[in-house]
Length: 458
Image (cartoon, rainbow, N blue to C red; front, side):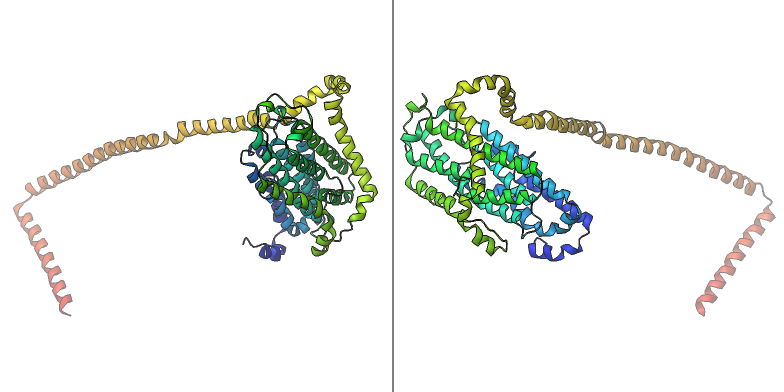
């Protein structure tokens, strides 16, 4: 059955080893569907659709199907969590590492659509990590994952729409050809600032609350390294978003843009963007109400905006934004650091941690070798097998024909010889004896005939 209710009601009948296998396979499916490490490379390559489509598919719905499925079936894996806690640890670390790797890739790409692509990978990592800290569907980690899913839908959808307006006006996706759009497209600039604040979790935007839920839930795991990984991902999130703002809006206008007629997106597009911007702000304050509706106790509201959590969060963002500011406005300070430290890091990021090279040169070549081996087996064995079989059958038939011919000749020869011998005996027999033989045969035939008639008459 595909019914969630039926599956949940009958899960107790499933043996624990089978359920454990299902749990790990489900995690693998979520990793592939939601573009998590190491199966994350496909998402950036999929950024060829119009940005309005990307806002729906990559910002709000399709890519999150893996996270949703894990959360929806989380109640099934209660026995697995109790028996094998390692499963939750795997979930949490897959999400945390993906959040960090995705953020660093977004920090390096020059493609304006590449930023939200890698950002989506990273933010879904936050959601997966939160699920890894959940002990049940009524825990804070489970709620935090779903709450951040909707927070991300709002600010990422807004981000794609603003990017669509920029690409439509400029005719390029290369941020290196941009700059100085703050005055030419002030509304788009304002909406992009909202995206930056919402994506990075600046209070009082929604992701401040959702990321607060995630961090609080991760503290409950007792893993400081896991929490620090998420904090580092948050800092880099601010860094790559600030970098894109500087490249697109704040630096000097490029030579390319001097030849382009700049204009704001259509009003209907701005209207939709305005609704998403309002939701980016208002959604966070609905957290306690939604938590109560879902049966999860949540104690974060307006008071959290002025708590110690806010100070820590802002300090983390400061750490992430400072290198970006120094890079673009105080570049001489970072020049020495770049020469000694950042060159290998830059090479690593430029090649996307060499995942594509790994898949292309090792995995793909491995499959190619297997395919060539299978092809050789097919050519040398399976394609020639009918020839070998038919040749064998022909040889067998020919041999059988020869042996049967000899056998028949031998049998006929024996019969012929016996016939000749019998004829010779008959020919050389005494006439009286011959008459006796004939009389005996006729008498025997007559007796048999009488017996048959007698039997039929009864």
